[in-house]
Image (cartoon, rainbow, N blue to C red):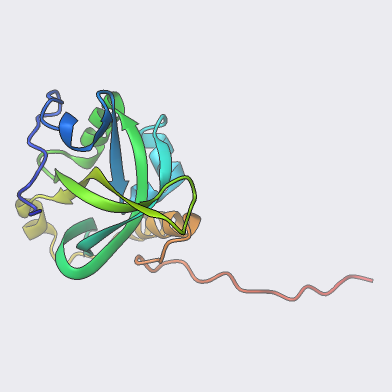
Length: 180
C-alpha cells in the first residue's frame, strides 16, 4: 500500500471509505500515533471515541515534522492506539487534523491487541493521517513544540508504548523513610 492509496473523500462523502476500514456503515477504526494517543487529548477532540487497544503499523516510521507524521519505511514500525469512531467523530477529526490540506487520510493495516490481550494480535484495516507532500516540505526538520512532545509522550506512557517523543523521564523509585 502506497501513501498515494489515500482515502479519496471530501469531508462530507463517506462512501469512498465505507468498504475499506468501516466496522459498520456508521463506525470506523482510527489508528492514532501522535498526540491523539493521549486520552485527555482524544476526549477533548472526539469525546465519544472508544479505545479498542494498542496497535502497531508495520512498514512505516514516525517522523518529526513540527508535529508527528508517518512515512513508508521498510522494516520500521509505528506504535499507537486503535479507536472506534463514528462518522460524526470522523468529520470532527478531519477538521482537527487539517484534512485534506495538512494531512491526508490513509488506509492502513494494523496489528492490534484487541480486548486487552497482549498475546494475540489481529490484522485489521484502519485509517490514519499522514502529512501531505506540501506540508512535509514546509515542516521538514522542524522539532516538536515542547507542549506537543509532552502530550505525545504522556499518551505513549499511558498505553505502555515505547516513548518515541522524549520529554518524559522515567519515574524514579524512591525510598521513603517512615516518620517516627
